[in-house]
Length: 377
Image 1 (cartoon, helix red, strand yellow):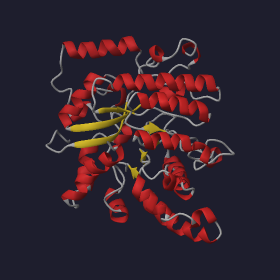
Image 2 (cartoon, helix red, strand yellow):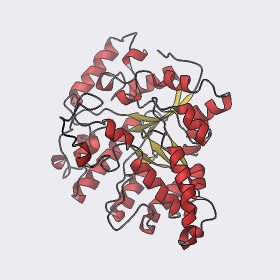
Image 3 (cartoon, rainbow, N blue to C red):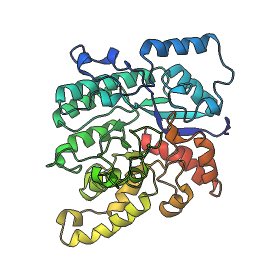
Image 4 (cartoon, rainbow, N blue to C red):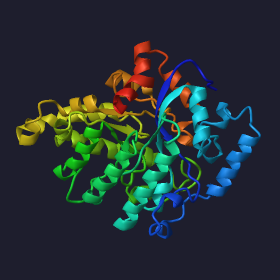
């Protein structure tokens, strides 16, 4: 198992595993009773979570910061929901910055009811900002849905005022009549560019990975990756790059990255083995410039915009060396997915093994430089 080393890291993916009533204190009074119960049976409530942290502080466990107590352990992980414990992890493993996403909380308010949706978004932004407030290395990633552009702009402005590390966007089209590259979304991209804050996509914020009928093979539905019913299975896995590939490709083909050359983005926890194919397909799509005037007007190939403005986190189980061989050293980011099991029990060790045959400059880009470029100033 990996132990602390002299290497420094910038971590593009970590999570809060929320207590059941984590959002409640941050929600406006009219929204609190409308939010759904946190959909996870293993989650403690706020009082129980505080009691667990207090007990650990009163009787410190000398093994609490060993790998066996950390990586991939979910709610059992030290630092899963307490920011002071999380800071101790950063100290121990030399992590100088860590993007922090929620896990289950959006399920409490994602809805076609816009009052509930954006009221929940406001509480979610406040909760993440509070979790990250005591340690500048913890960088909150609020979610901003595009269901209503005016409300999205208002909530984005409120989120940017909190100093987030990035803004999480949904990688589906905003509606049946508006794609990701629609100019109606330009106020979103303009604000992010002006604020020097990147957008990110993340697994779970796209559409359904597999149409329901594709699961029907005449056999019982097997357990998911984690042994339950709500995570990914094999057919989901092979489609995991579908939504980010289409979303990011549209931003390139529709000229968003040309209109906003300082806008930066990343695909987080969606793997990277699909990225070489995406770049190749974007090069092939340039043939349609003969019949598409807007595509012909782009001064660069669509793939070059991706290379200039977008980063990707490979899974620890990806063939990271093969991806680097095909896309070069400038696009990939290190991530732990702490404390989710998908990140594996040894993300640091696994990535170290993947990068063993590469030079120091490539490793430094993967662990530090590419993430620093994403984060900007």
